[in-house]
Length: 152
Image (tube, helix red, strand yellow):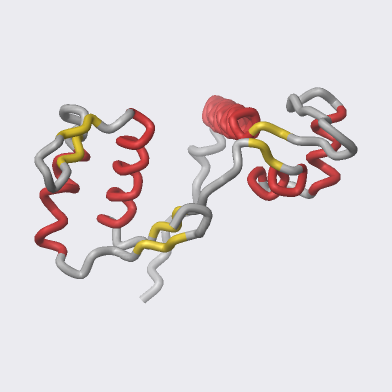
């Protein structure tokens, strides 16, 4: 199973699934795994969060794809993760926006750095949109709306 992408579909037996959904959504105690021999293991925070996200998506009727990622990415893999072209990613590396290594001829980027950069860009985008909405609101642009018309 390791090294292969796996897609998980929502369970057909929804009744058996709802207790798990409710428990994970409650944010209660750390989830535990109980093995068939009775051994109980506290799940690490990262695995508990992954489980919450997977179960949350399945509860919405969505499929979930789990795919392993190397912790060190090629420039193409990093570009794909960020949704940009490889030349754009290389420019980000050259400009120092993302740290990278060059163990040989090719650049390598750490997955944690790519994810942190993606989160920063998303936060900055949301902040810019919030600021634009506030400016528009202050300028009264939301007050001048058209009179609703009946469509039937």
